Image (cartoon, rainbow, N blue to C red):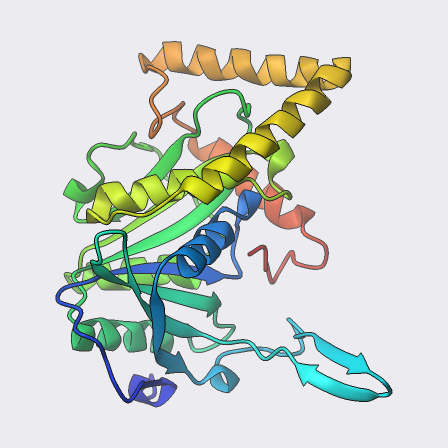
Amino acid sequence: MVLDPRGLYEFAESIPTLGEPVLIQALDGFVDAGGARRLTREHLLSTLRSEQIVTFDIDQLYDYRARRPHMLLAANKWESFNAPTLAVHAVWDANDTPFLLLSGPEPDTQWERFVAAVELIMQVLGARLIVGLSAIPMNVPHTRPLGVIAHGTPAELIEDYPKVRESVRVPASVGHVLELRLGQAGIDAIGFATNVPHYLANLDYPQAAISLIECIEKSSGLRLPVEALAEAAIEIRESIDAQVTESEEIQQVVSSLEKSYDDSLATFGLGPISDGGPLPTADELGAEFERYLSSQPGQSDHPDAG
């Protein structure tokens, strides 16, 4: 039996007027190739006006021994403890339209209770849609547009995105369970996974964050700035291109990925569209998920890539 979900969170004393906001789910803890989800979340919170309006009881949801927070030892005494925070923020976009941002570590326990809590919070705050963010490593080159895999309920939400027609079994995340349960409850729920070149998966890749922000804008109508990310993306691209130029071996790898990418586009009759790209097969998706998760030190059973 699931315990009362209202015991997991509390609202701030004052809640701003929000209308019917979109909730963006950007929890850490699952696959986040290129740091795309983290970069997106940090960018939105640092460039837009925001305030924390819901706080979760982290002690009920977080495994401190599996993901030990940092402490600072200074002058022979403990000076600070970087306690994790799981919260919902109210954020205002460039047009002063409010939306919600769920951020913090993915819960280690009580997933169904947490999902029920988020559903209650959405009902209280009048949220009309939840948008989940993720990024997965794929065998694609950095010289081509990033593809996006979309999933959601109802199907009309993702009709403009390429379809993965096969079934694929991948490790679960609370964000995906949240999308599943809300969709079953008749609440509009959508998720986006941008495809990051696998050789850049463990680096910060701002272009992938821009891809996720474009998906948010398209699905929600929000207007979100990307200038700072775009500048960072240019610098990263120049650095990557310089390294490729200096190595014949890397050039061959990139050329091979470009050929595979272009052949896939031709096979499926697609053009180089920003929200499309080659359609991955179920085997490719599953293999890339497993490969990336197993490459994270000590995280094969408890991924924390965000």
